[in-house]
Structure formats: structure tokens, C-alpha cells
Image 1 (cartoon, helix red, strand yellow):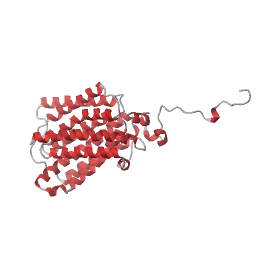
Image 2 (tube, helix red, strand yellow; image 1 turned 90 degrees about the horizontal axis):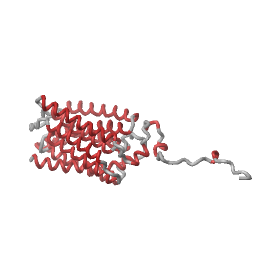
Image 3 (cartoon, helix red, strand yellow; image 1 turned 30 degrees about the vertical axis):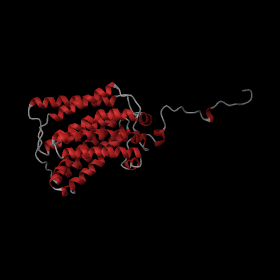
Image 4 (cartoon, one colour; image 1 turned 45 degrees about the vertical axis):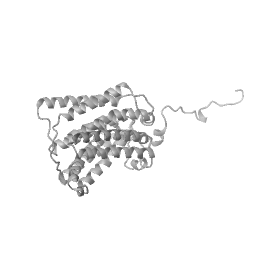
Length: 323
């Protein structure tokens, strides 16, 4: 059963990467400032390609939840890491850009680091339990941190903004996975368990995390944003599984040291992706000044930076007699 769940999780990772790569183009093209509000999702919902991407991502999330119902969180969450290389290649294909060797190497570093971290956690098999009160406190705390991150993101350069927003979005989505793990396990026993407060909290967190992720993609640093998502999401999910659902932590000093080294490898790989020169060209033109986007009017943001201004009539030389 675990092998079937792993295969399902792998298919889900590909679908999520495909959906995210499809969404990126429309997120960059959407009107407004660099960091958009929640109604920015309404505009995106009218774009066919973004909707196709959403369906693909939804299929990936559904496959992920199905996999969670048959295996522990600490086994299924690392499988999603494989989606990073899928996402890098798909994004380059859709944007007609070349995949750099440094991107692939950095992506592999992130994958190896995350697999190293998450494989060192014990794989508990007990049915997870979480009270409504605990879930509300957890969801409220994650959303509060996300709101602060969203407000601060207006004032930082695009590369860092992508990491901040994706980190907050990935934490929200990882919390969604943790709560969904409880709902999925309960639903196997009683189908009515899906109609609960936990389900509502999971949906609210998923929408909030989705808004943050679309803004992270909007910066044009897709590979870095997706890498941060793949770090924040599974680590948050495994942390919830270990601390709140009784799935445990690495028990020996050696395992803890190896987990720390693996985490450093994943973080370094993400930093390399964030500093990569390869960036969605449309985002580079619209939001590539490095200045806070909130200081720019929408008309200035829409103008490509390489546009040459024509001289005004008043600046031309007079064309009087004798010329």
C-alpha cells in the first residue's frame, strides 16, 4: 500500500509542477502592482491558461491527499520535492528560455537536502488526531505571520520578495497538508468527517497560501519561489506531524547532525536559484527595477525599462528660415 501511495504522490508532484508553471505566466501579466491583493485571484480566474494550471495543481493536490490517506506524512511529503526539477524544465519550456546547468544543479541540491532532512524523521503509523482548538490556533498563527510577510514584501527587491512570499505561502500550504492528513485519516473511517471545522480551516489556508504563491510567481523568480515552496511546505508538514500528530523527531545526535547538514544544502540550493540571472522576461521588464513596487504607479510599471523616450515638441530645435 505504501508503494502505491508513493507512486500516487509522484504523479501528484508532476501535476503540481505543471500547474504552477502554467500559472506563472498569467500571474506575471496580471495588472496591478508588484504585490497584488486577494482580488488579484479573481482576475486570474478569468484566464484560460491559469484555470488549466489550477486544474492541474488541483489534481496534484488531490493525488497528494490520496497518498496521505495510505502512508505517513513523513513519507509522502518528501515525494513532492521531485516536482522542483519538473517545474524548472516546464517553466523554461513555456517561457522559451534555456535551462541553465546551475539551475539544475541547484534544484538537485534542494531535492537531495530535503530528502535527507525528511527521511531522517521516524515514520509513525498511528492515526493522527488534532483538536479543533489546536487547529484554530495553528491556522490563526500561520495566517497572522503570512499577513505580516505580505505587508513587508512590498518594500523588498523581487528576488527576496519571491522567497518571503513563497516561504509564507509554503508554510500555509504545509499547514493545510498537516490538517488534511487528519481529515483524510478520519474520512477513511467515517465519510462524514470531511464536513468539519478542520476542512474549513484547510480550505481557508489553501486559498491564502495560493494567493501568496501567485504573488511569489509574479516576481518572475519562478524557480526560486517553487524551491522555497518545496522547502517550507514539507518541513512545515513534517513539523506538524512530528510535534502535533505524534510522528516523532530524529532520535540520535548523528541523525540530528545529518538533518542539519541536509537542511543547509537545501537552503544553499534555494539561494542559488534566487540569485540566478534567468528570470521571466516580462517580470524583469515590469518589476525589475529593484525599487519597492508600492512607490511606482501602475503606468510606470507597465512600461518596459528599455523603451526609448521620444523628444517632446518643446525640446526639438526650431525649424526657422535658413535651416
